[in-house]
Image (cartoon, rainbow, N blue to C red; front, top):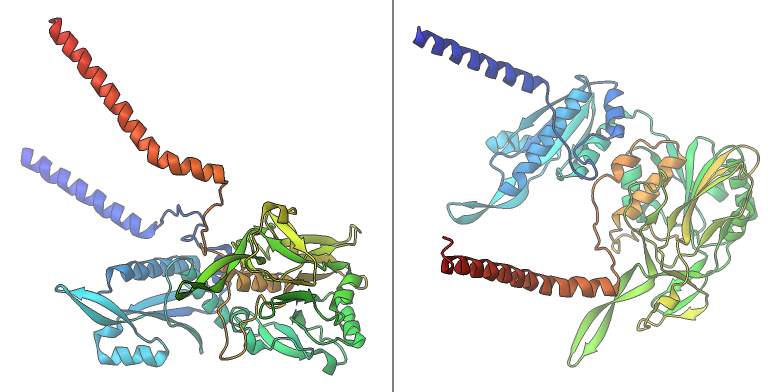
Length: 505
């Protein structure tokens, strides 16, 4: 009888374990305690998955036996795909393939566009190099996108969602990139193009070559014009805005030339006057900011020449953003040689928002002036605060129809440069311009996702007195705690000895 009860109890426990296991496989969930919810699907991803017109197939090419630092990448990607599959209601399926299994699968991965990366692995106390695959092919019908290398963290969701979005769009809306007045060509803005081309078809548009701006453009981008603009071209832009158009304008009316160490007003090409007619007033002074990027200066130190980093307030690092779709989630935008921007119309039919603002310690410098790299800046040089350097405006800017504009007081902050001299941009510079154009084009789907994730965590600036307090506190506090502990311990021992002497024990 006793043995029978034991068998029944074991059967019940086994049954409970089986049921719990089955439930856990069906009721999958995981907690996300990160500050930016990086392991939780964004609204943009959910919307895209719920609107999939066809089944999406994901082939993940991942090597087995990856080194420890890459194992979590595979697991994170698999977890992400599982959530995508659940959210898509069966419209997304995936499989994992190991290209290292045989030569045929390795060739298949490489022919598909997923190439190996060489990683170091330790095997029997020896370092060896391994051909590792961490890519994926996303396919819908006959359209496919390749993610050659899966990046860990929030970038993983952005890469996967944008790839799905790219193949799910049959006809991309168009954005016109105004050309013909010395503007930067598309080839010199490769990072901005890569982000925008996910959703849009970017089309160079010769303003002077056309009778009017086509209304099929979701928005126009006008970046760093340098030559004089004919009034006829401004008239075309006025008409485009009067019909409800939207424009992104990145332009500076100032000229900062570090090679000549000279700051001056730029030649008047008519843009400032045109913006002023629309109610957008560009300042005529250089913004300086205590929050800035340094410049590298070569200095002679004895017999050696060394590079030294010197703070340069003409290179503001913008960390002050408004709660607006174009600036949401940004952490820092680099905006050298900027001026202020203000909206002067007070009519209630308009709505203006300062998107980017300087820090609490800012100032203004009137041109022309020379640049003194060795200048010792003091707090007296930063008597202003929260100066706007980029602005969004909505309302009947030209005519009666409501239109939208985003204006930035720097024309080069989004330009990588000509081929062979291209420089990588600050990530949030690209995100800000992309978000602004998304907002102007009435497509804010990927804004949250684009700026999701931690890109920088700079140290908090402290007062000098606070720094001194923390410095001496770190040194003296442990010593003080030790002395207190020693004093308490000595007092307790003394009491014990007195009690022994008195015969209390």
